[in-house]
Length: 381
Image (tube, rainbow, N blue to C red; front, side, top):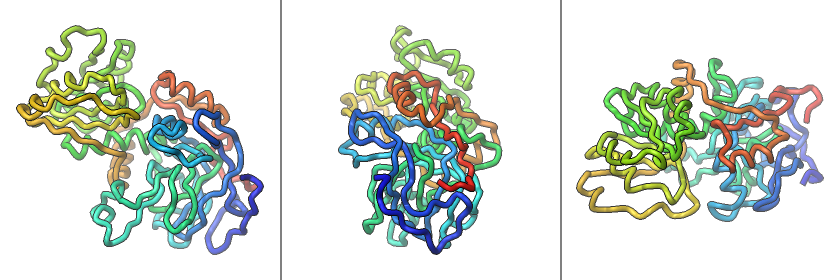
């Protein structure tokens, strides 16, 4: 792919780091189960609503693992994953979203494009994350045969400017990166279902998403936040994050009875089809809500419908967040001094990082960093 003919860039503003053409370099998967290799790839056709970003860092998400192995359906290979991207804007289209300038620190989350058409119910109501014509940040096809979307395990990326976020100065890049997916995925249901001073919240799974769920629930004023995980090895971490209580479901006897009917909202970040679903649902108070944000490759456990009916329980699902809520989340994190727990590694160690994520060794999110730090270079790329 790196040998494809390059096309000259015309019609837009650019800094010293503008590439002469549409071939970028990144870590690509050629098929399920194959290690990523560093090579060239041709990005989508340039449009004047686009922004090119020199990638500083990119978080490693469980979604990357699912897509790399075609766990959620057949992946478009070759594929460059990564949708927790922070970097520097190095080329800004003449019709880009106002407020983005060359040299700005910016970010990209899971949505690389939404239609923003007046006839789109979801875009016109500022719920762009449910746009039926949306394009994922990687492994998806742009409309009108503009090309394939590629993610942030790369030196540079190109995306629609209306999916590009300005990053508050108070946030460090690694924290901001993981908030663009993991943070937004838990923030959206917390906000939608009224997390606040009257809401007792449970967070299932203390990992990449779950630890941010605890942080944001406390920042939103929830008086009681209970963290759940299988084993007790994360007890100290959960309490340091701000959880009021911690429950090790495989080690504590009678936990489901002890905490029955005690929570108003549960955010479930795990995707294990063997989880004690019935017991978790029993933790909700009448009219309580269970929101599943972890996306399994297999069906969820069967439901006990009668117990749900008698309790008036609601079950919902949520996928990332709207752009407006992401901006609100970033500002909240900046104002409250919220810092994600990350482990920063060189981008060239991507295959080792993916293995650590697969084995559950991350505490709690791995962020891959380019050696250049995403800074423009007078030598180009």
